[in-house]
Length: 148
Image (cartoon, rainbow, N blue to C red; front, side, top):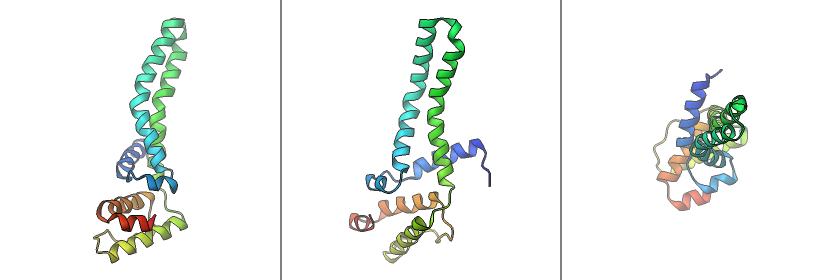
């Protein structure tokens, strides 16, 4: 299934909001680090692009307009790269090890009385993110420490 560019960006934004911001997960999965870098890039790169383009044109003149445009485009694409990675990752099926972990967490949460969506046969990373967010939100710290 091919996703359009805009769908990929939207999925990346949704996955970024869905992923639980827990430092303990950073040891297992790269999502936390990628989300932090993407959020920083969203804030920092547009002003950096403007400053770099303006300073390049100020120092070198209008003859360097194509180079200034390329530098600005480079800085502006940095947040997009993070969102594309996150969108792609959200729609990717879990590998066997994480699939087993997903099922184990789901089963233990059901035993503790949590109301969850039905267990997916072939879950994706976005289903894992939803499950983990629910686990950190609804379960006590003893349960989450036991799982991680």
